[in-house]
Structures are given as C-alpha cells and as structure tokens.
Length: 97
Image (cartoon, rainbow, N blue to C red):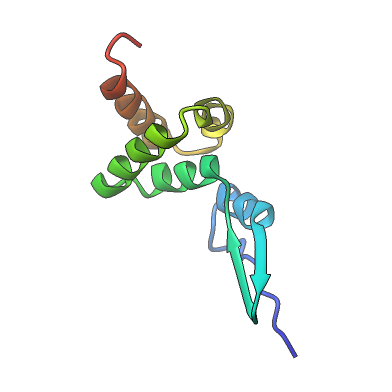
C-alpha cells in the first residue's frame, strides 16, 4: 500500500499549499519525484529569503529571464518581505529598473 502525502494546511501558508497541489509528478524505475516550475522555485526561494536563496534566484534568472512575468503575477500572495527581496534582486540585475 502506498501512502499519499497531503499538505498540512494548518502548518503551511496558502501559497505553500498551492505549490503542493501544482507540483509536477515524475516517475520511473520505482521513483516518484515531485518538482515545481521555475517560477514556483523562485517564489519558494523568495519565501525562504536567505542570502543563498537570493543568489540562487539571480542564477535562475540568468538561465531563464522569461520567468519574471510569472513570478510577478504571483508575488502578491507572498509576505511583503518577499516582494522587497525580489525588488532588490531585480534592481541589482538592472539598475535602471
């Protein structure tokens, strides 16, 4: 019998619960992996808010700058500190913005 994990909604934010539901499932050779999209990964990193997370976001933006639109469309569901970190990262990448 295989257990199905569900988010403990009392222990996570609505944002985190949405990511849990939206995750992509991958499997093969007995593995069952879940992953999020690049914008979701950036949003999680913004939520975590550490210096390594900011560096990771900068690197992800180097690889795929098109994620900016998706991140900004969802940014309002995160705490204000996340928006401030996002603005700081974007300003460091493009001082004219």
